[in-house]
Figure 1: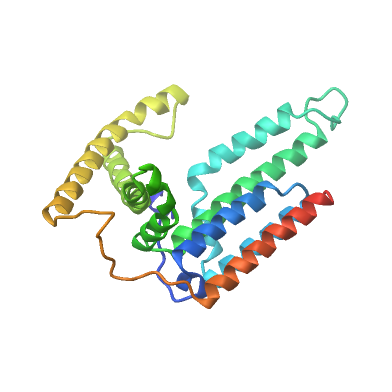
Figure 2: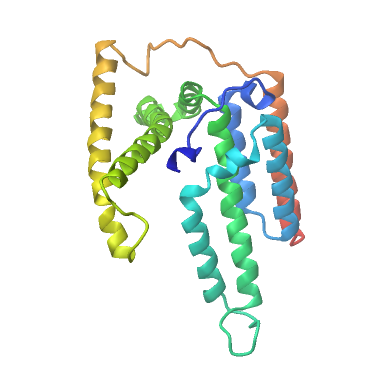
Length: 265
C-alpha cells in the first residue's frame, strides 16, 4: 500500500543522530553524496555500505523502514540497470550477445549507488523535524541573502514539501481505495490504459492539494506570519562537541573515499 512508503517522514527519538544540529546533518549529507559519487570500485562501495549501516544503527532506524522509501523509485532503479546492461560495451557473456560482463558490473554498481543515495539522504528526514530542517537550511544559506536570494522562503518551501509528502501519499491511497470501490482497475491493461486509469486519481489529488495549500496560507496569514529578518525561534541552534566530532568523521570518510579512488578501489 502507498501509506507504507516512508518518504519524508520524521521518526522522533533520542539518539545521537537525533540530537545532532540540523546544520551538521545537512553538511554530512552533502559530504556523503560527494563521497558516494566518487566511489569507483567495489571496495569503495563496500565502505559506503558499512558507513550507511553504522549510521542507521546509530539512528536506530529499522532497515525495513528505510527500504520502504525505495518503493517510489524501484522503476527508476530497474530502468537504470537495464540501460547499463544493454548499452555498455565490453566482453559479451556469450559470443553474439549484446549483454556484457562490464554492463552487468556497471548495472549493479549504479543500482547500489541509487539505493545508497536514497537510504543515506532519507536518514536526514527520518531524524530531523521539518522545523529544525528549515532553520538549519536557512542558516546555511544565509550568505545568499547578500545577493537578494529569498533564503527563508526557499527553506520553508522545501521543508513544507517534505512535510506534506506523507500526507499526499495517504490522500492518494484514500482516493485509490475509493476509486477501486467504484470498480476502477489500476493493475491490468497496457501502459496507455493504466495511464488513463490514473486520471481519476490525479484530478481529485490536485484539487485537494490546492485546497490544502490555500487553507495553510490563510492560517499563516491569520497568525500574522512573516519570515526572515526579525523572526524569533523557539529553539536556538547551537553547535556542540558531538557536532564537531561528526563533522570530523565526515571529513575522514570523504578522505578515505578519495584515497580508495586514487588506488582504483
